[in-house]
Amino acid sequence: MKKRALIISLMTILFLVNIISAKIIINEVEINPYNGNEEWIELYSDQVLNLEGWKIVEKNNRTLTINADIQNYLIIDLENGFLDNQNEVIMLYNKTSLVYTTPILNDISADTKTWNYCNSTWSFLDSTPGTPNNCQIQTIPKNETVNPLIKPSLQMNWNSEDIINGKNFDITIGAFNLDNKNYDVRAYIYLDDPNKVISDSYNDYDWVSSNAYVNNFFEGPGNKTGTISIRIKEVYKNLSGNARIGIKIREAYSSGSIAEINGGITILKPEGGNLNNPIENPVSATQNSFNGQVIKISSNNTNTPKSNNWFVYPIVGFITLIVIFVIILSVKFLS
Image 1 (cartoon, rainbow, N blue to C red):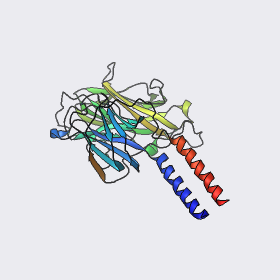
Image 2 (image 1 turned 90 degrees about the horizontal axis):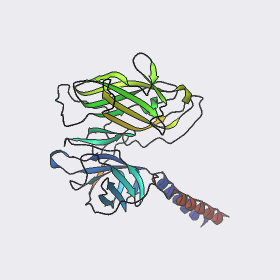
Image 3 (image 1 turned 30 degrees about the vertical axis):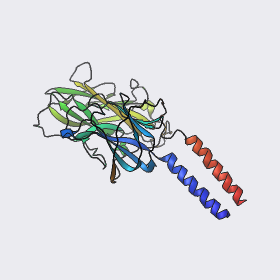
Image 4 (image 1 turned 90 degrees about the vertical axis):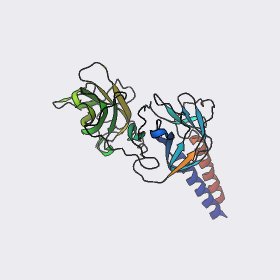
């Protein structure tokens, strides 16, 4: 009897731990499909989860309710027109708690590219529904005509193992739909305030503050890729953990940027340094290969849940109390 009670208690604890550690993100979005196909949203989870009562909400409060299980990838087909082609923002709610939100997304081209979550940021890449996102910098042939209706856009990529405080590391930058001009690029790392930069950049001559642009970094027209070297400022030599990275592009020597992108980045602990602002590594949906699921959902007009809770599971504290109670109960049975 005691042995059985112990086994049941351990199984309960393992189940609750899996719930606490589960992560789920919006992983890919098609807001303007090719040839009149359906819009869709792809979710990714590193655990098996039941999403009954979860909601997808877009910027205009159009809402749909999810009633499905997810195991790795889940593709939700939408009614066309549910998502806007410009300035769209998509939010994922666990009932009334905000779990995940995308940045502002734009797609007026109606092609086969979609918005993909890659390396803690969002990039406009070839569509990969139900499979890992192709996060490599993608280019088009140099002689392809630039569409004047599509504004320039950016994407960025890096090797997460290279982001070590005290060492230089490279950020690969992709710029899309450039005109026949020269362009300056600025890459910078910050903590909470983008005006308080904690990095330096190399401009082919010397290390300068990442507040400055690297002049004539790209030469249009078309799509271009380039690499810029960054390092953390000496004053932050013991810093590691969570930070943000931003990329801006402007026409050469002009006063304002024409496109920008930002996302999360993890700075690894320097050898012999102190661990400040630690976080766990962000979810990477590009390192695994699984089969996806597809479900069809119709929208409904309910009000947006009112919550600013960014935790995946806001009842973690309650679950922790249950775990403690189960442990105490097990000890009582065994005594």
